[in-house]
Image (cartoon, rainbow, N blue to C red; front, side, top):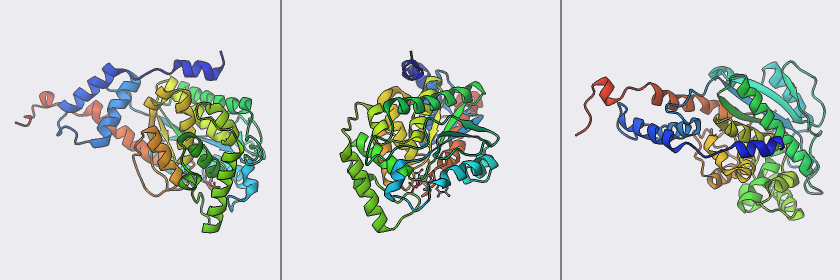
Amino acid sequence: MSLLSSTVAAIGPADAAAAAQARDRQARMTKPAGSLGVLEDLSIRLAGLAGQCPPPLPEPAAVAVFAGDHGVHAQGVTPWPQEVTGQMVANFLAGGAVVNAFAAQVGAAVTVVDVGVAVAPAAGAGLLERNVRRGTRDMTVEPAMTRDEAIAAIEVGIAVAGELVDAGHRALLTGDMGIANTTASAALVAAFTGADAAAVTGAGTGIDAETLAHKTEVVRRALARHDLDADDPIGVLAAVGGLEHAAIAGLVLGGAARRVPVILDGVIAGSATLVAAALAPDCLDAVVAGHRSTEPGHGVALDHLGLTPLVDLSLRLGEGTGAVLALPLVQAGVRALRDVATFDSAGVTEKQ
Ligand SMILES: Cc1cc2ncn([C@H]3O[C@H](COP(=O)(O)O)[C@@H](O)[C@H]3O)c2cc1C
Ligand SMILES: O=C(O)c1cccnc1
């Protein structure tokens, strides 16, 4: 059996008994019932995922930054040159990117993976060299990847998830680097949700109104170019996705198979999770939406997946920055379920 097939087969539903135990404990903790809002629901979900109440604290955490390039860059969808992808890989390895600063703040490790960078980055200490191909093809002309390439890149993500969990990590965070990847993200979201290109295409790193109109047309052309069927997620991914999207889908599947929470970053992660959920719907039990980015396709993807983002700070960066900022909230939700006394144990009188 392939790594993808065995991983999908290993993903099962949440443990209803552990979730019920967590729900019951939340009702008996020394606080008004429901007063921790979203964090209560989150702790109950994570108990169901782990199959125990309380679930293990989601730490130590690791953010996996998957880097890849995009043939659709040739269509003029972003003002940034493609070589920035590889240059930022070097910056991540040197500790100089925003995700490094934020990860240091919350004690998360940063793992950098070349799954599809166009020009081989200089082998820096810590780089995981797992390149499947040196950038995708232009999706407005031909499929971005072959099915085999898409599956190989998904399996890179599954393997990285396994390695990080084997190394002791108990929370996986998604990160991405890939100039032009918000264009592929928009196409994926449109293909899986049926939304119009205009509803899911955004400014990415920042473009003027004319370039945004052009980018929307590029997404529309790519969608029209391929015979996209949401029931064939590998086919959609291969046609209009990116190598880092594939790897992130794999990280989600791999985390879910190991029953470790996966905290999503922005629109690249959201669109990649549409692929993962189409392959294995139960993987969503492991998924936490870290934040909502300003890319319009991100909200469309999260709504489709039924996920509520934890923070909304108008970020539009990627790299894993939004996921990393959300990590302490996830940890606080679990810590409350684990450490807060009950009315009985603390001798606090319950409401009349
Ligand atoms: C210096 C720099 C650092 C970044 N870090 C993340 N991104 C983000 O922006 C890119 C997507 O935007 P678009 O589709 O508009 O090209 C991705 O690389 C994403 O990770 C960056 C972009 C730049 C320029
Ligand atoms: O939503 C994101 O993660 C995002 C938005 C803009 C540019 N890069 C990433």
